[in-house]
Image (tube, rainbow, N blue to C red; front, side, top):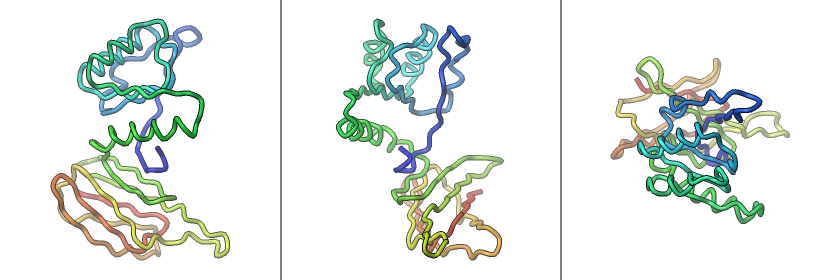
Length: 202
C-alpha cells in the first residue's frame, strides 16, 4: 500500500483478555475503508461494530480468516460492502490479489493519487485549508544528495479552490508547476520537485 502512496492508519484491537475490549464504533468514523487482515479471532463487540460499519455503507476488505466459528463473514457479505481475498501463505500469489482488490476499492475515494516511486504523500485538512505534504526519498549515495523529481504528478480530489500556495524548506526554490482542473479533481504537475514540498489549498 505504501508503494502506491495510499494513506492509511493502523488500529490495534484489544483481545478482551489481557486488555479490556474498549473498541467502539467512533474509532472507525471518518474511514471510508477498513482492512481486516487475517483476524481469525474477534470479540463479539468487535464483530458487532464491524458489521454495523458495513451496514452503514463503510467498505470492508477482508484478507484471509475472519472470526472463525462465527457467522460474521456471511453477515458482512449480505451488506454488499465487503470484499474477501484469500490468503494461502504464498506471498507471490496472495499480494497481487490483495492489491488488485484494494486498489479497486481505494480508487473511489483516494484523497491524493500519485504513482511516483520513492516518495511519501500525506493530505489532511486543518483550519479551512487542505494541506498536502510531499517528501522525496530519492537519495543518491554518489552525490550524497536527494535527486529532484523531474516530473511529479498528483491527482487531488475534493479541492475546488483556486491556485495553491507552495512551501519548501528555507533556501530552496519552489518547483515550477502547472495545474489542471478536471471534473471532481485537480491535477497538479511539479517539475524538479526537491526534498520537501508542501501544498496548501485555502
